[in-house]
Length: 257
Length: 380
Image 1 (tube, rainbow over the protein chains, first blue to last red):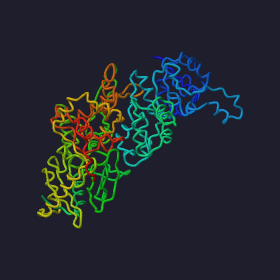
Image 2 (tube, one colour):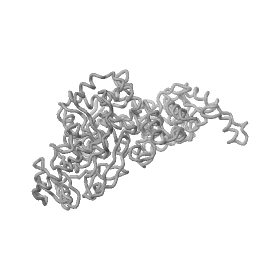
Image 3 (cartoon, one colour):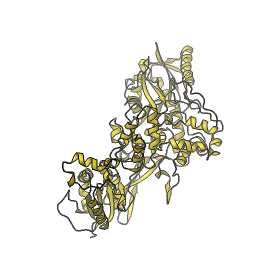
Image 4 (cartoon, rainbow over the protein chains, first blue to last red):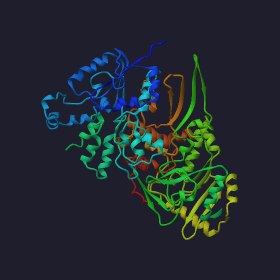
């Protein structure tokens, strides 16, 4: 019988929510284990098989010198490396520190700042090593995770479109809150993947999946400015889980005083 | 022409239901009019109308109890004839080959079983959009079996427009506000002290239903009043589009600086194409099960504003926002004529209303024509 490919799941600075999405797959997880050997997934099992591994899923961002080295070791022992979630693909919510001096935060937050060794910026994995595929989201959508694993197993391109959340809204027939007096919504500049979760509950899109392909954030904020929104409000809209993703970072910085 | 009183509208709905139709009509949800299953006249937006402008939609109370006193809502009817997702193929691995089957349009495996729909209150612009999609899905050499099956069993109750909005320009596109053809019944509502509908039958099915309803021959006064109300909608059109020579104008100006300017504003979010009642683009997506034993092929709504839509081996053909906006607008107003023998635009104004940054197709045509923007005509 053919050897089943081995899977490793790695954690860097993150909340574990994306790894949990894999455990959340429940019924489908059994099907996954029939096709993949879970070789190194400490959140699921204490049994760790030695690498190298065929597929590595990497969660979290690089925030320490130790992690910046560790990711290179992981890359060396991984045939295919896929990053999952906003931390791994954009630096995560912890990348808010990138806009300020981290030493100041450390001095306020920790009683003994001397114990804290951290890099000045939280950065995505792709800033450090070659990444085969990035799956966006905070957290990632479990169906999209299954699709990525499925595509990997079947040697095909994953169906993970990079267009806007608006496409998902319109397919679902959700009334656009941007036009019909709803709250501000980042849908037109945000990567699809959540199936328009927040708009389906009458909330604006928070941009959890990061910038979509060719995002035109400047046009959207100019429009909002005309209707009276202030720079500090606009800045906050883009300072979120994906604050350090290029397009969102540049947009928020353009509203800094 | 016959007149049916407001009190008999529910009788019309009951007759249609008895003949096996599922009624789809406008209804109020989440601050807008959407389309959904309805069962009686009270499900319609009774006494509501809408204010529409670029990136602006609000519902507002009317001072009467009209059933159809508004312009077009957030959804177009295409979602019932050309649904957002349709399964095209089921495939099963058989040793070294595979078995493929196409689900029949009637089967429930498409996601939703195909129903016999009666569309209630189709505005003339939208009726024209359906006639345009007929050419796309039935009349251009390749017949779409799902569209055909849904279309053949469809019953259309058109509602002539008595209220236009700030983004309406059907009169410019010769697509309204009065329905000319393609309906089973066409009604003009007169809501006031007396509340009645002047009804015209456009098909045998329509005549049969009308004859079963309590009706009378319309008086001249009723006809005049109905005509006056439709004329009011014509006068209310919030937008105009000068169609004279527009095909050549757009095809001869692919490098006009306006394309670059509008692309600076365009979000390429695809909203305009997805709300458009004639846009028909889709992509085909293959999925597999984890074991690779079965596969499915799905057709989903897509848009010329996405990069993947023009992706072929080696890259995306329309990588700039400018080229994507130009593709959409020139197809809609110019090359559509060459392809299907008419404009692809019916002047419903949805692309203007539902664009999150209010890009206005009529203004873009005017800019390329080089004429000065006319003062905005009165809002509804």
